[in-house]
Length: 231
Image (cartoon, rainbow, N blue to C red; front, side, top):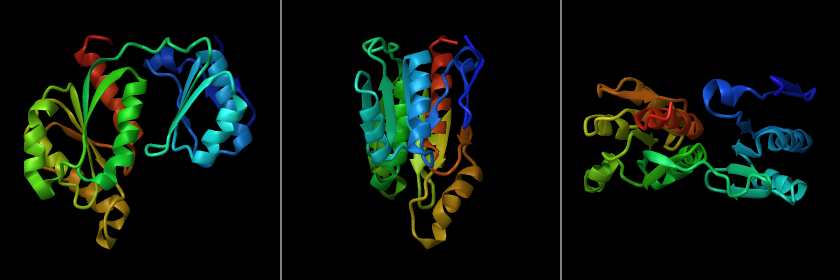
């Protein structure tokens, strides 16, 4: 297999799965329709499957129109776009382990869903625990036993970003924190939540960038595979 395919406007990494365990993913936002279609065409031909993040409804429609024979799915909440060739249909990797995806509030769900769907695409079982923020701590405590069953926990929160600190003191597995841009003016587009998470006194937590559900899902999958002895 070629190491790189040069399309002129991009260079696709065709050995990434062999090196890292996960094939190249397409960040759709900002890409021209013609470029996005050609990227999907090339990756579908080589890998049989493609994951796209931050896709708009219009981009999803363009991909569906361009690949009639492929199975194309789009989730408008997470903005996750996937395509599977006809040959690859029904050949999904069997899901293993468990990742818990927790959102502090309902407004954090789009980022949480991006994390959840990324993890599912890469072969992890995912259980969602939405709207379990610290404003009503009983909601989290009612679900904590289920969360503790996971190999990794993703905590998605905006506002003051307190959920990960609480979870860090309640579970024995790594907690991946995702600050979101949800909040009023003093949240500064997620910077307040980011700083809260970075300054947390809880052990066993790490932080990804603001609204980066994909990054959290990816890391959680790596942890999940290690826990299941898959790496």
